[in-house]
Length: 407
Image (cartoon, rainbow, N blue to C red; front, side):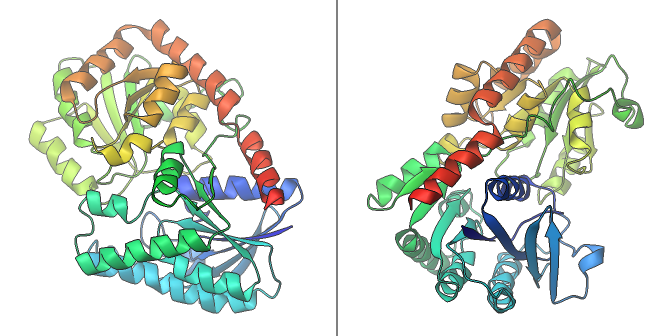
Protein backbone atom coordinates (compact mmCIF):
# COMPACT_ATOMS: atom_id res chain seq x y z
CA UNK A 1 0.00 0.00 0.00
CA UNK A 2 1.29 3.46 -0.95
CA UNK A 3 0.15 6.65 0.80
CA UNK A 4 0.96 10.25 -0.13
CA UNK A 5 0.40 12.79 2.66
CA UNK A 6 -0.14 16.36 1.46
CA UNK A 7 0.31 18.92 4.23
CA UNK A 8 1.53 22.48 4.61
CA UNK A 9 2.91 21.65 8.08
CA UNK A 10 5.55 19.02 8.91
CA UNK A 11 8.68 18.62 11.06
CA UNK A 12 11.23 20.03 11.69
CA UNK A 13 8.48 22.54 12.47
CA UNK A 14 7.05 22.25 15.98
CA UNK A 15 3.29 22.05 16.42
CA UNK A 16 0.25 19.83 16.78
CA UNK A 17 -0.38 18.89 13.11
CA UNK A 18 3.35 18.48 12.49
CA UNK A 19 3.77 15.99 15.34
CA UNK A 20 0.50 14.18 14.67
CA UNK A 21 1.16 13.57 10.98
CA UNK A 22 4.79 12.58 11.47
CA UNK A 23 3.94 10.11 14.23
CA UNK A 24 1.13 8.61 12.15
CA UNK A 25 3.41 8.30 9.11
CA UNK A 26 6.14 6.55 11.13
CA UNK A 27 3.69 4.01 12.52
CA UNK A 28 1.97 3.34 9.21
CA UNK A 29 5.38 2.74 7.69
CA UNK A 30 6.11 0.18 10.40
CA UNK A 31 3.04 -1.88 9.49
CA UNK A 32 3.96 -1.95 5.81
CA UNK A 33 2.57 1.23 4.26
CA UNK A 34 5.01 3.04 1.97
CA UNK A 35 4.57 6.67 3.04
CA UNK A 36 5.60 9.75 1.07
CA UNK A 37 5.05 13.34 2.24
CA UNK A 38 4.65 16.45 0.07
CA UNK A 39 5.02 19.54 2.21
CA UNK A 40 6.28 23.13 2.35
CA UNK A 41 9.65 24.53 3.32
CA UNK A 42 9.60 24.66 7.13
CA UNK A 43 8.75 28.12 8.48
CA UNK A 44 6.20 27.80 11.29
CA UNK A 45 5.67 29.35 13.85
CA UNK A 46 8.28 32.06 13.24
CA UNK A 47 7.00 32.61 9.67
CA UNK A 48 10.57 32.55 8.41
CA UNK A 49 12.01 29.83 6.19
CA UNK A 50 14.40 27.75 8.29
CA UNK A 51 18.05 28.46 7.61
CA UNK A 52 18.94 25.18 5.87
CA UNK A 53 16.05 25.58 3.40
CA UNK A 54 16.36 29.24 2.41
CA UNK A 55 16.72 30.13 -1.26
CA UNK A 56 15.61 26.68 -2.43
CA UNK A 57 12.70 25.89 -4.72
CA UNK A 58 12.62 22.18 -3.95
CA UNK A 59 14.18 19.86 -1.39
CA UNK A 60 14.07 16.06 -1.08
CA UNK A 61 15.03 14.37 2.18
CA UNK A 62 14.21 11.30 4.23
CA UNK A 63 13.04 11.27 7.83
CA UNK A 64 13.05 7.89 9.57
CA UNK A 65 12.57 6.18 6.21
CA UNK A 66 9.76 8.50 5.11
CA UNK A 67 10.30 10.20 1.73
CA UNK A 68 9.74 13.95 2.13
CA UNK A 69 9.40 16.35 -0.82
CA UNK A 70 9.37 20.08 -0.03
CA UNK A 71 8.31 22.97 -2.25
CA UNK A 72 8.28 26.77 -2.05
CA UNK A 73 5.96 28.79 0.13
CA UNK A 74 5.46 32.53 0.61
CA UNK A 75 5.86 33.55 4.25
CA UNK A 76 5.31 36.88 5.95
CA UNK A 77 4.96 38.16 9.50
CA UNK A 78 2.14 40.39 8.24
CA UNK A 79 -1.09 38.97 9.74
CA UNK A 80 -3.52 40.45 7.20
CA UNK A 81 -5.94 38.14 5.40
CA UNK A 82 -4.33 38.99 2.05
CA UNK A 83 -0.91 37.83 3.22
CA UNK A 84 -2.43 34.74 4.82
CA UNK A 85 -4.17 33.81 1.57
CA UNK A 86 -0.96 34.40 -0.35
CA UNK A 87 0.77 32.04 2.07
CA UNK A 88 -1.84 29.33 1.49
CA UNK A 89 -2.10 29.66 -2.28
CA UNK A 90 1.65 29.83 -2.85
CA UNK A 91 1.90 26.29 -1.52
CA UNK A 92 -1.22 25.22 -3.42
CA UNK A 93 0.60 26.16 -6.64
CA UNK A 94 4.10 24.99 -5.72
CA UNK A 95 2.89 21.62 -4.37
CA UNK A 96 1.26 20.80 -7.72
CA UNK A 97 4.50 21.70 -9.51
CA UNK A 98 6.62 19.67 -7.09
CA UNK A 99 4.35 16.63 -7.43
CA UNK A 100 5.81 16.13 -10.92
CA UNK A 101 9.07 15.11 -9.24
CA UNK A 102 7.25 12.26 -7.47
CA UNK A 103 7.23 9.60 -10.17
CA UNK A 104 5.19 6.81 -8.61
CA UNK A 105 1.43 6.43 -8.28
CA UNK A 106 -0.34 5.96 -4.95
CA UNK A 107 -3.27 4.06 -3.51
CA UNK A 108 -4.30 7.00 -1.34
CA UNK A 109 -3.63 10.72 -1.04
CA UNK A 110 -4.35 12.10 2.43
CA UNK A 111 -4.74 15.89 2.56
CA UNK A 112 -4.46 17.77 5.85
CA UNK A 113 -6.89 20.65 6.46
CA UNK A 114 -6.60 23.46 7.35
CA UNK A 115 -5.66 25.15 5.17
CA UNK A 116 -8.78 24.12 3.29
CA UNK A 117 -7.48 25.59 0.02
CA UNK A 118 -4.85 22.85 -0.16
CA UNK A 119 -7.79 20.76 -1.32
CA UNK A 120 -7.37 22.29 -4.77
CA UNK A 121 -3.94 20.68 -4.97
CA UNK A 122 -5.23 17.44 -3.48
CA UNK A 123 -7.89 16.99 -6.15
CA UNK A 124 -5.43 17.59 -8.97
CA UNK A 125 -2.57 15.52 -7.55
CA UNK A 126 -4.85 12.63 -6.60
CA UNK A 127 -6.08 12.46 -10.18
CA UNK A 128 -2.55 12.53 -11.58
CA UNK A 129 -1.33 9.89 -9.14
CA UNK A 130 -4.42 7.66 -9.54
CA UNK A 131 -4.98 7.90 -5.80
CA UNK A 132 -8.17 7.77 -3.75
CA UNK A 133 -8.62 11.00 -1.80
CA UNK A 134 -8.79 11.03 2.00
CA UNK A 135 -9.49 14.45 3.49
CA UNK A 136 -8.26 14.86 7.07
CA UNK A 137 -10.04 17.62 9.01
CA UNK A 138 -8.32 18.87 12.14
CA UNK A 139 -10.37 22.10 12.26
CA UNK A 140 -13.75 22.84 10.66
CA UNK A 141 -12.66 25.49 8.20
CA UNK A 142 -14.17 27.86 7.04
CA UNK A 143 -16.72 27.59 9.88
CA UNK A 144 -14.13 28.27 12.58
CA UNK A 145 -12.59 31.19 10.67
CA UNK A 146 -16.02 32.77 10.23
CA UNK A 147 -17.11 32.35 13.86
CA UNK A 148 -13.79 33.62 15.22
CA UNK A 149 -14.08 36.69 13.00
CA UNK A 150 -10.86 35.87 11.14
CA UNK A 151 -12.65 35.91 7.77
CA UNK A 152 -15.62 38.20 7.13
CA UNK A 153 -15.59 38.50 3.34
CA UNK A 154 -18.85 36.92 2.13
CA UNK A 155 -17.50 36.07 -1.31
CA UNK A 156 -14.46 34.33 0.17
CA UNK A 157 -16.59 32.42 2.68
CA UNK A 158 -18.99 31.25 -0.03
CA UNK A 159 -16.08 30.03 -2.14
CA UNK A 160 -14.62 28.20 0.87
CA UNK A 161 -17.90 26.52 1.83
CA UNK A 162 -18.36 25.37 -1.78
CA UNK A 163 -14.85 23.95 -1.82
CA UNK A 164 -15.44 22.21 1.52
CA UNK A 165 -18.53 20.44 0.15
CA UNK A 166 -16.74 19.50 -3.05
CA UNK A 167 -13.81 17.97 -1.16
CA UNK A 168 -15.98 15.94 1.20
CA UNK A 169 -18.01 14.52 -1.66
CA UNK A 170 -14.93 13.63 -3.71
CA UNK A 171 -13.23 11.84 -0.83
CA UNK A 172 -13.54 8.10 -0.26
CA UNK A 173 -13.14 8.92 3.43
CA UNK A 174 -13.20 12.11 5.51
CA UNK A 175 -11.24 11.70 8.73
CA UNK A 176 -11.91 13.98 11.68
CA UNK A 177 -9.61 14.67 14.61
CA UNK A 178 -12.54 14.65 17.04
CA UNK A 179 -15.90 12.93 17.22
CA UNK A 180 -17.49 16.37 17.13
CA UNK A 181 -15.88 17.15 13.77
CA UNK A 182 -17.07 13.83 12.36
CA UNK A 183 -20.62 14.42 13.63
CA UNK A 184 -20.71 17.96 12.21
CA UNK A 185 -19.70 16.68 8.76
CA UNK A 186 -22.03 13.67 8.93
CA UNK A 187 -24.99 15.87 9.92
CA UNK A 188 -24.42 18.24 7.01
CA UNK A 189 -23.43 15.61 4.45
CA UNK A 190 -25.09 12.27 5.36
CA UNK A 191 -23.68 10.47 2.31
CA UNK A 192 -20.05 11.24 3.23
CA UNK A 193 -18.10 8.46 4.96
CA UNK A 194 -16.38 9.75 8.09
CA UNK A 195 -13.83 8.18 10.42
CA UNK A 196 -12.60 9.38 13.81
CA UNK A 197 -8.81 9.62 13.58
CA UNK A 198 -7.88 11.17 16.92
CA UNK A 199 -4.62 12.68 17.98
CA UNK A 200 -2.70 10.65 20.52
CA UNK A 201 0.57 10.30 22.33
CA UNK A 202 3.70 8.17 22.35
CA UNK A 203 3.79 6.92 25.93
CA UNK A 204 7.35 5.65 25.59
CA UNK A 205 8.56 9.14 24.64
CA UNK A 206 6.44 10.98 27.22
CA UNK A 207 7.24 8.79 30.22
CA UNK A 208 7.75 10.56 33.57
CA UNK A 209 9.48 7.52 35.06
CA UNK A 210 12.11 7.48 32.31
CA UNK A 211 12.99 11.19 32.51
CA UNK A 212 15.37 12.42 35.13
CA UNK A 213 14.97 15.78 36.84
CA UNK A 214 16.16 18.63 34.64
CA UNK A 215 17.58 22.05 35.35
CA UNK A 216 14.69 23.75 33.56
CA UNK A 217 13.36 25.47 36.69
CA UNK A 218 16.70 26.91 37.70
CA UNK A 219 17.53 27.97 34.13
CA UNK A 220 14.32 29.98 33.97
CA UNK A 221 14.51 31.54 37.42
CA UNK A 222 12.10 29.26 39.29
CA UNK A 223 12.64 27.57 42.63
CA UNK A 224 11.64 24.09 43.77
CA UNK A 225 8.93 25.69 45.91
CA UNK A 226 7.20 27.43 43.01
CA UNK A 227 3.86 26.01 41.85
CA UNK A 228 3.96 26.36 38.07
CA UNK A 229 0.85 26.45 35.88
CA UNK A 230 1.87 26.03 32.24
CA UNK A 231 0.23 26.97 28.97
CA UNK A 232 2.32 25.68 26.06
CA UNK A 233 1.17 26.14 22.48
CA UNK A 234 0.12 28.70 19.94
CA UNK A 235 -0.76 32.10 21.39
CA UNK A 236 -3.71 32.75 19.15
CA UNK A 237 -7.23 34.10 18.98
CA UNK A 238 -9.03 30.81 19.58
CA UNK A 239 -7.33 30.14 22.92
CA UNK A 240 -8.65 33.21 24.75
CA UNK A 241 -5.54 33.40 26.91
CA UNK A 242 -6.59 36.66 28.52
CA UNK A 243 -8.44 34.52 31.05
CA UNK A 244 -5.12 33.25 32.45
CA UNK A 245 -3.72 36.74 32.93
CA UNK A 246 -6.93 38.02 34.47
CA UNK A 247 -6.97 35.08 36.88
CA UNK A 248 -3.29 35.65 37.72
CA UNK A 249 -4.29 39.03 39.17
CA UNK A 250 -5.90 37.10 42.04
CA UNK A 251 -2.59 35.43 42.93
CA UNK A 252 -0.30 38.47 43.07
CA UNK A 253 0.09 37.97 46.81
CA UNK A 254 1.01 34.27 46.40
CA UNK A 255 4.69 34.60 45.58
CA UNK A 256 5.17 30.91 44.81
CA UNK A 257 2.32 30.56 42.26
CA UNK A 258 3.61 31.24 38.75
CA UNK A 259 1.96 31.21 35.33
CA UNK A 260 4.10 30.33 32.30
CA UNK A 261 2.91 30.98 28.75
CA UNK A 262 5.29 29.18 26.41
CA UNK A 263 4.85 29.73 22.71
CA UNK A 264 4.40 32.27 19.96
CA UNK A 265 1.53 33.48 17.83
CA UNK A 266 -0.52 36.46 16.66
CA UNK A 267 -1.83 37.43 20.12
CA UNK A 268 1.49 37.41 21.96
CA UNK A 269 2.22 41.14 21.72
CA UNK A 270 -1.29 41.98 22.85
CA UNK A 271 -0.95 39.70 25.89
CA UNK A 272 2.46 41.10 26.77
CA UNK A 273 0.82 44.53 26.81
CA UNK A 274 -1.94 43.21 29.09
CA UNK A 275 0.66 41.72 31.43
CA UNK A 276 2.37 45.11 31.79
CA UNK A 277 -0.95 46.89 32.19
CA UNK A 278 -1.97 44.56 35.04
CA UNK A 279 1.49 44.53 36.63
CA UNK A 280 1.78 40.76 36.60
CA UNK A 281 5.21 39.67 37.83
CA UNK A 282 3.78 36.17 38.33
CA UNK A 283 3.20 35.70 34.58
CA UNK A 284 6.23 34.68 32.53
CA UNK A 285 6.33 34.43 28.74
CA UNK A 286 8.83 31.94 27.28
CA UNK A 287 9.71 31.01 23.72
CA UNK A 288 8.54 27.62 22.42
CA UNK A 289 10.91 24.68 22.81
CA UNK A 290 11.58 21.69 20.58
CA UNK A 291 9.74 18.39 20.93
CA UNK A 292 12.96 16.92 22.33
CA UNK A 293 12.92 19.40 25.24
CA UNK A 294 9.21 19.21 26.02
CA UNK A 295 9.19 16.10 28.26
CA UNK A 296 11.73 17.73 30.59
CA UNK A 297 9.60 20.87 30.80
CA UNK A 298 6.47 18.85 31.60
CA UNK A 299 8.39 16.78 34.16
CA UNK A 300 8.85 19.85 36.34
CA UNK A 301 5.53 21.76 36.12
CA UNK A 302 2.61 21.26 38.50
CA UNK A 303 -0.38 21.63 36.17
CA UNK A 304 -1.33 22.68 32.64
CA UNK A 305 -3.99 25.26 31.84
CA UNK A 306 -5.74 24.45 28.55
CA UNK A 307 -8.35 27.05 27.51
CA UNK A 308 -10.42 27.84 24.45
CA UNK A 309 -12.89 30.64 23.88
CA UNK A 310 -16.52 30.05 24.84
CA UNK A 311 -17.98 29.17 21.44
CA UNK A 312 -20.30 26.34 20.39
CA UNK A 313 -17.73 25.68 17.68
CA UNK A 314 -15.34 24.30 20.30
CA UNK A 315 -17.76 21.84 21.90
CA UNK A 316 -16.21 19.23 19.62
CA UNK A 317 -12.59 20.38 20.06
CA UNK A 318 -9.79 18.42 21.72
CA UNK A 319 -6.61 20.51 22.05
CA UNK A 320 -3.65 18.28 21.23
CA UNK A 321 -1.60 19.55 24.18
CA UNK A 322 -3.87 17.53 26.47
CA UNK A 323 -2.25 14.25 25.48
CA UNK A 324 1.39 15.05 26.23
CA UNK A 325 0.52 16.61 29.58
CA UNK A 326 -1.51 13.62 30.71
CA UNK A 327 1.10 11.14 29.50
CA UNK A 328 3.57 12.98 31.75
CA UNK A 329 1.10 12.78 34.68
CA UNK A 330 0.51 16.55 34.61
CA UNK A 331 -3.05 17.35 35.74
CA UNK A 332 -5.00 19.66 33.46
CA UNK A 333 -7.08 22.73 34.24
CA UNK A 334 -9.42 22.49 31.26
CA UNK A 335 -11.42 25.42 29.93
CA UNK A 336 -12.98 23.50 27.04
CA UNK A 337 -16.59 22.29 27.27
CA UNK A 338 -18.20 19.46 25.33
CA UNK A 339 -16.25 16.48 24.03
CA UNK A 340 -12.97 17.30 25.80
CA UNK A 341 -14.69 17.84 29.13
CA UNK A 342 -16.66 14.58 28.78
CA UNK A 343 -13.56 12.55 27.93
CA UNK A 344 -10.87 13.94 30.20
CA UNK A 345 -12.78 15.28 33.19
CA UNK A 346 -15.98 13.20 33.47
CA UNK A 347 -14.62 9.87 32.22
CA UNK A 348 -10.89 10.15 32.79
CA UNK A 349 -10.86 12.21 36.01
CA UNK A 350 -7.62 13.76 34.75
CA UNK A 351 -8.07 17.34 35.95
CA UNK A 352 -10.45 20.16 36.84
CA UNK A 353 -12.88 21.82 34.46
CA UNK A 354 -13.52 25.57 34.44
CA UNK A 355 -16.11 27.47 32.46
CA UNK A 356 -14.40 28.88 29.33
CA UNK A 357 -13.41 32.56 29.69
CA UNK A 358 -14.68 32.61 33.31
CA UNK A 359 -11.99 34.23 35.47
CA UNK A 360 -13.68 33.36 38.77
CA UNK A 361 -14.04 29.69 37.84
CA UNK A 362 -10.44 29.46 36.66
CA UNK A 363 -9.26 31.11 39.89
CA UNK A 364 -11.14 28.46 41.88
CA UNK A 365 -9.61 25.61 39.87
CA UNK A 366 -6.09 27.00 40.27
CA UNK A 367 -6.61 27.29 44.02
CA UNK A 368 -7.72 23.65 44.28
CA UNK A 369 -4.58 22.45 42.48
CA UNK A 370 -2.22 24.75 44.37
CA UNK A 371 -3.62 23.94 47.81
CA UNK A 372 -3.63 20.15 47.41
CA UNK A 373 -0.51 18.70 45.79
CA UNK A 374 -1.55 15.12 46.59
CA UNK A 375 -4.91 15.57 44.86
CA UNK A 376 -3.20 17.12 41.83
CA UNK A 377 -0.72 14.23 41.61
CA UNK A 378 -3.59 11.72 41.68
CA UNK A 379 -5.33 13.50 38.81
CA UNK A 380 -2.08 13.30 36.84
CA UNK A 381 -1.78 9.56 37.42
CA UNK A 382 -5.36 9.07 36.24
CA UNK A 383 -4.42 10.98 33.10
CA UNK A 384 -1.60 8.69 32.04
CA UNK A 385 -3.75 5.60 32.53
CA UNK A 386 -6.58 7.16 30.51
CA UNK A 387 -4.53 8.23 27.48
CA UNK A 388 -2.75 4.87 27.45
CA UNK A 389 -6.11 3.11 27.19
CA UNK A 390 -7.77 5.42 24.68
CA UNK A 391 -5.18 7.58 22.85
CA UNK A 392 -2.10 5.43 22.36
CA UNK A 393 -0.58 6.27 18.96
CA UNK A 394 0.27 2.63 18.26
CA UNK A 395 -3.35 1.54 18.60
CA UNK A 396 -4.64 4.52 16.59
CA UNK A 397 -2.28 3.84 13.65
CA UNK A 398 -3.07 0.11 13.51
CA UNK A 399 -6.82 0.76 13.54
CA UNK A 400 -6.45 3.32 10.74
CA UNK A 401 -4.39 0.86 8.69
CA UNK A 402 -7.23 -1.67 8.97
CA UNK A 403 -9.69 1.02 7.81
CA UNK A 404 -7.51 1.81 4.80
CA UNK A 405 -7.40 -1.85 3.81
CA UNK A 406 -11.20 -1.91 3.81
CA UNK A 407 -11.56 1.01 1.37
